[in-house]
Image 1 (cartoon, rainbow, N blue to C red):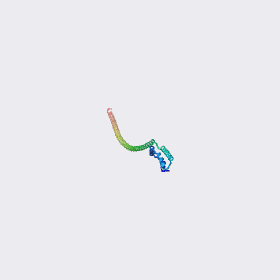
Image 2 (cartoon, helix red, strand yellow; image 1 turned 90 degrees about the vertical axis):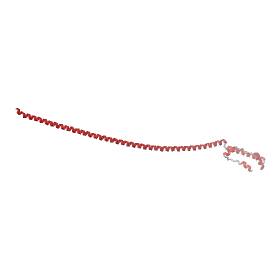
Image 3 (cartoon, rainbow, N blue to C red; image 1 turned 135 degrees about the vertical axis):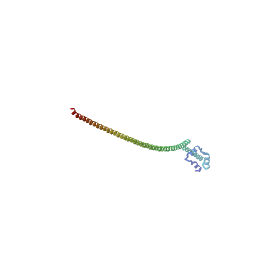
Image 4 (cartoon, one colour; image 1 turned 120 degrees about the vertical axis):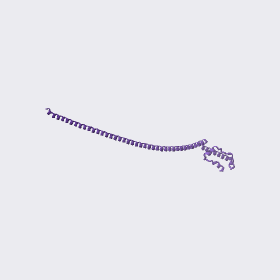
Length: 214
């Protein structure tokens, strides 16, 4: 078979999307008359040349139909491109949202750590202040208790001294009363003795005067 026929039969079967888009809008320039003349010049009869031309034309039409059936339409390509762009945009947005969410989560975690540290510091400070207030109040209570004990001791001493003074006064009154009673008894005894002495003297005088009267 001549080389020109090989070039007509070697139709590619694999196309890319860009190639298919170009083929959809490309008109195949197939000159039947020139092909018949070329075949006649190469030794084919006119009937053979026409038959070969028709076979080649039919094969080209079948190949074009097959290629067009396997290729995507323009709307499909646009949809696929839009879907790809949308998918890429969604992935970028998802990545950006994830990065923003991670940054926000990190920021929130940092704020939580700072807040926990602040709460711990405030709790420690408050606990220390409460302990100091408790110790101060405890010391004040002890001081007040000591003051109260001192006052009670002073009152006890005063009462003891007062009771001692009262007892001394009572003893002095008792002693004075006893002394006065003893003086009174002694005076009464002296008076009784003196009265008895007077009575005895009077009787003695009367007894002496009776002989003279007789």
